[in-house]
Image 1 (cartoon, rainbow, N blue to C red):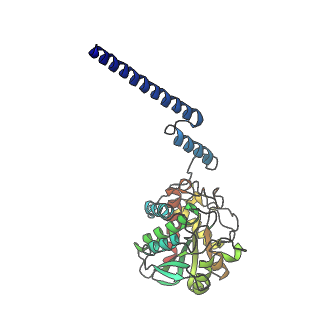
Image 2: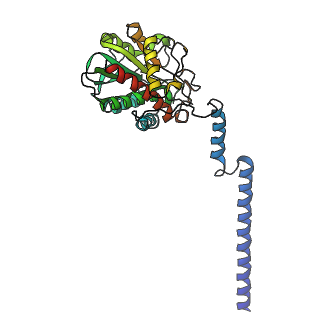
Image 3: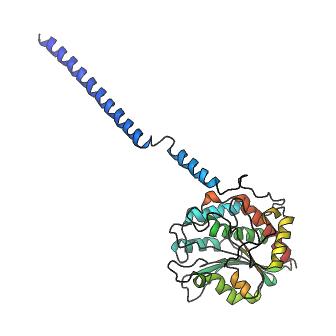
Length: 333
């Protein structure tokens, strides 16, 4: 009897354990169903759904053919290097307004990439701000190729893929290309990355508080500069660069002719766009012929959406090949 009772008790215990296990499984299944009803499975379709939605929104602002810019007929500008540097600024340094630690770190990075790279203080009125300057020596007056390397202080977190990173990357890549193709007896070419283009947060008058680096440079060195070419919004998808309204007409005509020779003239329509107060303005005021390459129709201007998904290496290549063709012509004069 004792052995029979023991076996019967063991069987009952096993049945209880099975019932408990089944109950636990049922509870877990019920909880999973509740989670699914409320928010969907967390690992299925969630990220693709957001990506698809974002793509649908972005498509409203892009040309019907996507990144509809011409393919250059020449291959002198290293667009892969330029786009990698654009990406590096956005991903490694992130939000980098004037005076920030991130911008100081970026400045050191950029100085090492420019021929004869050095810092030049913007001045005592703007402590901590510095332009990054490179040079290919030659005859004067010099040709200046510039961009600003700081980004908007507002909105916080702005990474400026097109507004800041693109122009900076293009200038550095142009410096590399031109330094690798020296022209004996040619003109001096300077590469200047301006600090403090964007106005500081809380500025009462953004018109007078911006362009700090370019104002300082034009004031000190304007007389030694023969032409100034500014690269600003130059990598947006569907790039379109009509003449900025204040840009020097003769220099712009030469740029369009250079773009035609490079096979990218379609991106430089024979039209005049908006007048933009930009880093070329102090040079124009100093009597230096200057042009501003800026795609003012870029839909994500001054927003957090100005990120890597809105720029392309092909647009950067179009800009680079056209400017390289122009500068190479100018330095041989």
